Length: 375
Image 1: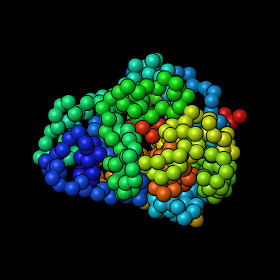
Image 2: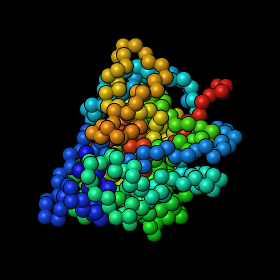
Image 3: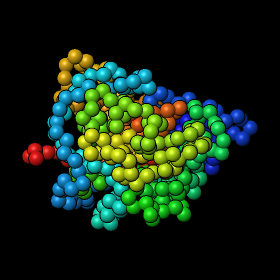
């Protein structure tokens, strides 16, 4: 894990003598089944963003869809399912409202203008905090490297082993929601695209301002299924590559060749593809979405398989993965990088761990709101 962190966070601009040198071959990084689309990157901050100054605005339900509560079977649906999607189990959720699409750049920009909020990706790295997550004696990098930035998808020029995600993820100084590809990029013309480089606490801050919250995993999956039963995708069971484009995903050879059959290389404007049965857009593909639940790969096995669980809220804490320092929430829905050869997480049952202080160029969110009176 530590070697993986140093490569992901510092390569190619930093060589740490404790783990590598120019004369040593680049190590192969094993990708765990539960992190195939989400690099396992240790937090840079380990602090909670200050949201006390954020005043909630009057919260209505404009742009939201009412989801009437019900019971469904949650979890794995086909042979692409990973171990953390088993066992399938019955769940009941109460009624709720959910955003019809992912939070856009325009919506997030309004939030920032009204609150002055600064995202985690816009803050410099605190070495005193980061070093606590590394082996004793790890040398401190130069201060010029401990500057604000985020993880940006940077495709290789040719085919590479799919077990080494340092080949396509690059730590990019200056990358943030306003500059999704790094310095020189902007969101001009992308106002209706989902906001990215959003960590969990950034999403919480927006939710507080909007008078909403993040969905639980159960709410998210129930909504994603769109009223269908045991469906593989938000639109049903037809394979994502069959017929017309159904979601923003990766077509071609990942990670170096995207044919853009769906019309987009990275993010797509929200509502580009058909909604699911509940009228929700991009419940598969486009960007990963934060949920409120801690991630534990074995959580489903703690729930009864023959008894309905009502409104599950997830495990009490994160399992931490390979690093005891990590706090991980569950992300859902997949992204524009998902491809069957590597990550088929546009499936409604797919789930991944997201380190809560790490934003990336394929991670955003949508909000939900509790029901006061059912319409």
